[in-house]
Length: 353
Image (tube, rainbow, N blue to C red):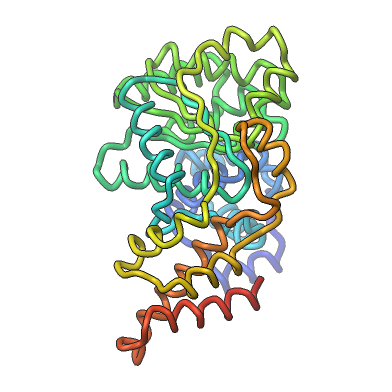
């Protein structure tokens, strides 16, 4: 790729990080964004061959320096922050009934090789819980849980490549080679589990992504978690009909997440902060963290119960708790009451929202 004088000057004034750091960041970005190496290559105006060579550490075979592709990739990632960045894995999970259930089911799927469905509306912390589980397994040096996020119109090959990138293999090969490599890697760390977030998006490309996932599960003898929208299984059944009946028969457990409940707040706050909140402060949290539930009626019909028109939004509760913790750490707040810190954090958080 030809380099202009202005590009040379820009790179000289703002040199990119080392190749290893850029590769690591790019792999993480692609996994979170659901991009393949070809998509990233187009985005930074490089050929897919150049991107493949760079990601595999063999760029010197086609160019004398990789500084310009490193600069282009770093610049692109910096300028194109991913949506949902507030769903990064938190340091502490909100210890609700839902999060505890999700962690138990992740462990169950990993240990027993089961296929488990987790359905829930936005704001039930599915992404945070799955990410937290993977991080904890890695922290324990187990490296046997692998999370991917489905994107719109994801194909079977896209899904396999995404899993491949997550387990640490070269994912730009043909479907058969990617599948065999993924299976080999998963077998090496058995028992293992593949966690698929935003699983309802798999339905947009027909039965093929589910067939690819079935091949991975059957050949690697691994567990699988599919976390999706509150009516994921129903939309799957209605949308693909008989094509998916055999696949649905493989589901061992199906859980419908209920969301954070008001009566959980006192216990959740006590476990999170290590001390109790008075009733007035608990009610303040409940009021400030509520969001409209536009699917309350349909969720009620699916779950066989009644849902309120507003629900406690997990994301808002988490942000409020994290803001309170940050205030707690500031010099001069050592003797401040938890009640006053929560109220201060609530005021700041609500202005931001």
